Image 1 (cartoon, rainbow, N blue to C red):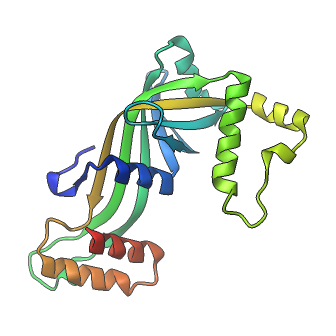
Image 2 (image 1 turned 45 degrees about the vertical axis):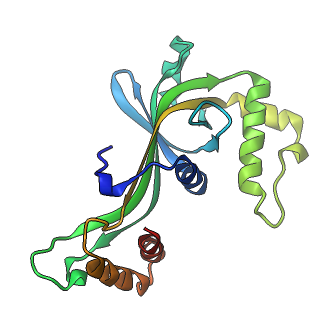
Length: 208
């Protein structure tokens, strides 16, 4: 993605935390010569590869996975993680000759997508996914408590995958290209908004 230097975030730990906190991503590949995208939760693991890996699964009926069966090296893939975002009105700058814009935070992870079809590997992927999202629940749903035959039938209907990350890009577009006085006015406007995203963007602007 296009990332002006003033908006770039390159700290691997910060990018990894963002992917963990905003783990519902868009996975983009080529399918039959055209772009194809799926919206899926992804688990980031730093121990796999120099930049880490992302793990997820497709429904077997989803054709996106089929292109990866032709090569052991996997296929090029892009995972897009989106954070809070909001419209910025030029009226908040309280200055002439300013224009509307949009503030947002995003991370792009590019790499090679490889399939996980071996039953034990797929079961472990689903177990880790369930644990990641169920642990915060008051009464967590546990894979181990389910009927084995039921789980086996579910696994037949999905295809696991790993994206070994080759490149990470982080973009924190938060009015860094504006004077401090303008940024403070925008922060004040967003912080007083009832919208959750507005308040989150205001907090990120303060951090930046």
